[in-house]
Length: 258
Image (cartoon, rainbow, N blue to C red; front, top):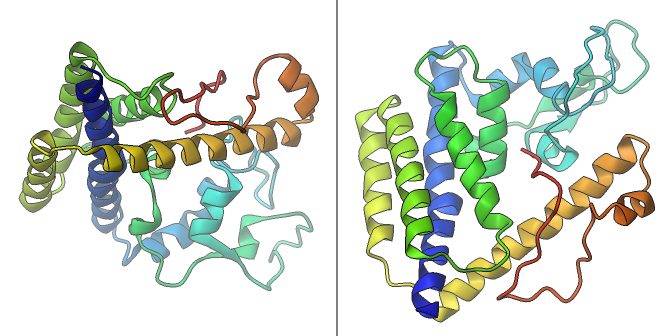
C-alpha cells in the first residue's frame, strides 16, 4: 500500500512539473501571437511596466503602484536583464525603463509557478483562457509541494488527477488540436507509467528543493516589507531548512507565493 501511495504521489508530481508547464507555455505563446506580438521578447518589452508592478510595490516613472507583489526577483531575472540606459522621464529610482526582455527569451524558461502567475496577471484579455483552470492547477500544485508526506491515497489521487486533467485539456483545446493531442498523450503516458523507487526519490528531492526556494523567497519578502526574520520565526512562519527527510516533507505554514 505504501509503495502504491508513493507511486500516486510521484505520478501526480510529474503531471504538475512536466505536463502542466508544457500546456501553460502554449497558452502563453498563443496569447501573445493572437494579440499581435512577434515573439515573447516583443510581448515582454511592451508589457514590462505591468510585469514590473507585480514584482515591486514601489512607484516608477509612471507613478503606478501595485497592491500585491506575487512575482519574485529570480522570476523577473529569468525574463529581463538590466540595460545601461536611464529612465527617459528622469526618474532616478529603480524603474522598468531600465530593463529589457532577454534576447531570444522563450516560454520554456517558465516553470509551473511562473506560468500561472503570468497568465493570471498578464494574459487577462483573452476570453478563451478559463482562469478557474489556472486556479485549479495552482491550488493542487501547492497541495502537492506542501504535502506533509510524499504519499497520496486513492481518493485524493483521483480527485487531484481528474481536476488537473480536465483543466489542462480544456486549456489545450483552446490553443490548437495539436496542443490538445500532445497534452492528452502526455497525460495518458503518465497514467500507465510504472514509478520505480529511484524515480520517486528524485521527484522528492526536486520538490524539497522547490520548498527551500519558497522559504527563502518568503524570508526575502518579509524583509522587503520591513518584517524581521526573527519576528516571523517566532510567529511560526519560517521553517528550518536542515535535516529534510525524503519521506516526511516539512510544511510551509504561509501560503505559497504564486
